[in-house]
Length: 135
Image 1 (tube, rainbow, N blue to C red):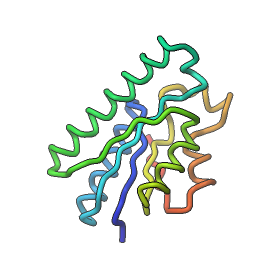
Image 2: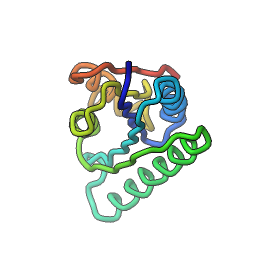
Image 3: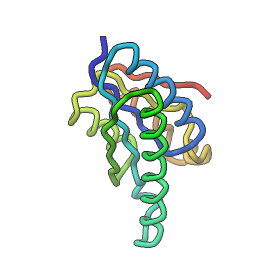
Image 4: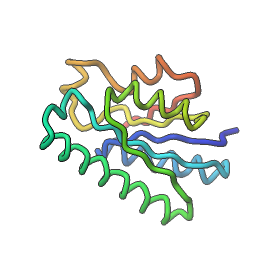
């Protein structure tokens, strides 16, 4: 049913719950796992803050790699910079993901009121199925 599963992570506890769901789906369907973390260009407005956000993104990917490896699953990871919903949708199209998994909340609940929910925008824009994991 699923051949390529993309999990978008920001390293939050909500994303870690979504990661666990994605790993279970990958295991069940013997699918490929892709993990993406996006450095939000609205937040990374200087070289110093961009580097900080990139470190957070890379840390989230290392957690995902470790969790996948513990489940015996290989993973392809990437960090992109830009608008999280747009980057998630673009990456999903690039890798041919037939399922995108996201948490329903990210690092900052305040962002939802300012710019809208990443999960909501991914659901609206996706060409594939989207699983929103509730926290």
